[in-house]
Amino acid sequence: MALEFTEANFDELALQSDKPVLVDFWAEWCGPCRMVGPIVEEISKDYEGKAIIGKVNVDENPSISSKYGIRNIPTILFLKNGEVVDKSVGAVPKNILTDKLDAHM
Image (cartoon, rainbow, N blue to C red; front, top):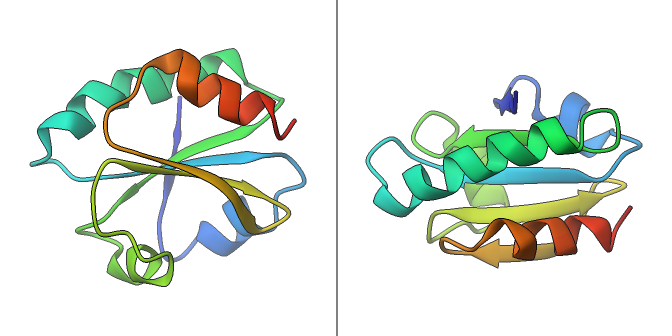
């Protein structure tokens, strides 16, 4: 299951990870986010032990969203060694996300 990133744990779980990290920025009221959510959950199972997969609720964690300039959701950031290495905006198919993640493994 995808991790729930919060302002309290984001640095430790996402930025300090020695594995690639996929971060899904979403909100309850966002229709396209509900389409991407199950895909992110599938990816978290597929990449268990190989990558860190998590979600940030933009309404509950505004400082993370503003730090990364998130203006549209869903936005998915790919982090490696604490740095953004790729991103995807909007509802996209699973293979697009896994291709981007694989590129940073």
